[in-house]
Each structure stands twice: as C-alpha cells, then as structure tokens.
Length: 178
View (cartoon, helix red, strand yellow):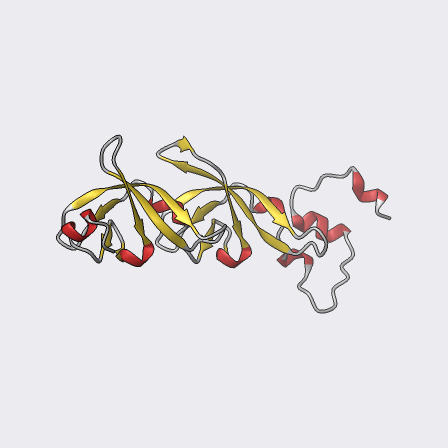
C-alpha cells in the first residue's frame, strides 16, 4: 500500500489525510503535526526581540531521531554572516512564523560599546570569548583603535544592554584592576 503514495504529490495535508489511514495511540493526529521542512526559512528571534537570521537546517539525534536543534543562517543589515547551531535547550518556542529563543546569543554583543562606571567609552566589542560551546560569556575583547585591544572578563561587567557597562572606573580599567 505504501507504493501507492511514493510518486504522488499532495497539494495540502487535507488531501493526504483523506487518502491516508491514521494509526495514533497516545500522540496527536496527523493533521495537527508539522513537517520538518515547514521550519526551514523561518526567522530566528532572540529573547530581546532581535532577528538574527533564518533556519537553514533542522538537526536530529543520530540514534533516537529526536529533535536536537537548528542551524541558523545569520544575517545583519543584509550581509551574510557565519552560520550558527542552536541546540534545543536554547529554543523557547517554534511558531508558524518564527523560532523564538530563550537567550541572546553571545555573538550579538559584537559591535556594542563598552562603557566604564564613569561613563567613558572604552571602545567596541570586537570578539566575544565563550566558555566552550555554551552561551556563557568568559570575556569581551574591546577594540578602541586599530592596534589597541583590551580584554574585559565577564566578572568585571555590571550590565548588558544597549551598551556593556563595566563595574570599574576608567583608572581601574586602565591598570587592568577588575
């Protein structure tokens, strides 16, 4: 009976449901399920509401075939950036229109200003050092001029927002007293 469906293309799930037998015990009916391909191309939105790209792939566990995560093709201002893999732990919800994350991925801080406790701008984030492959930030590399770089550990950061504010004053930062 499966050979009957191999070469047939259905316009929508309603047509398929009319010709298909359903075998459901504890799960949900076929009409209520989604195909993995429906997720491809959906926008990926951070917890703060920033769009970071679109889903290019859906990944499953190699043995259990349970959902593991997505690959996001990142874009910013229309430019293609490096793709990123987001595991299931960082996904809050999948809707018909977008994938909503429960985090702000560490890479979104690149380009943000770093300001000390005195209000003086130290520079902009050029690199975010993470702890292994997690979203936990170890430190920020701050670039003020072309050749001047400074590493600011996460323990020296007071808050993350429109800009990154350090706990230290300018003189403490200058002496690397975090």
